[in-house]
Length: 213
Image (cartoon, rainbow, N blue to C red; front, side):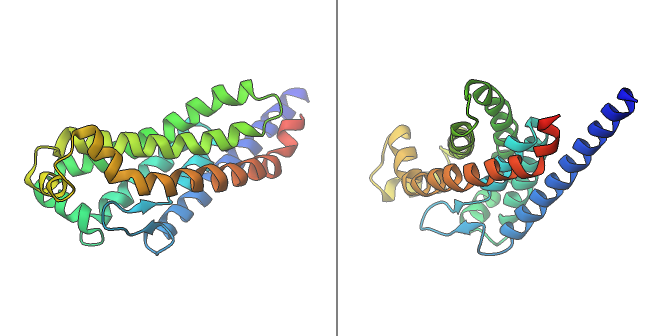
């Protein structure tokens, strides 16, 4: 009887995980193809799609984060085909490297957020601050990994150098700070506050029975 109970409990968790992951994928797709997902600026697009990626990574785990991050990355790459002027410019320079900048970086964001959150959650006795810290980390990783890949693969291109020239021929470090300054100021608080609050609530509601067993 006990073995059956454990099996049932495990199957329920798997179903809840699958349902929640599917819900997060649907949200990512909705945000990707509506104005909900991006705030367009003169430079990079401010992406809010990191929020559902962070939520899934925190309430389900690194594997879900990896899947959600990959979906985010694929939709980001799709944006390069005419929906994002910046992405279209990169695609015109090198499609393969543009794919690398868009997809693996976002996949890593989801996976690393889940891994790091697990460690933070163990240190948070009241299980409150960890969700907001996890949300902030997801946005920070998204900025660092995307910009790191962009600089690594496209820094010496005429397109990026023309942007740099228009803002004063800055060093790489200064360019990154200037280029993503506004984006980071919007993305990080949004993912921290919204992602943290939603993750905490969903974890409590969806997994209350399992956590009490």
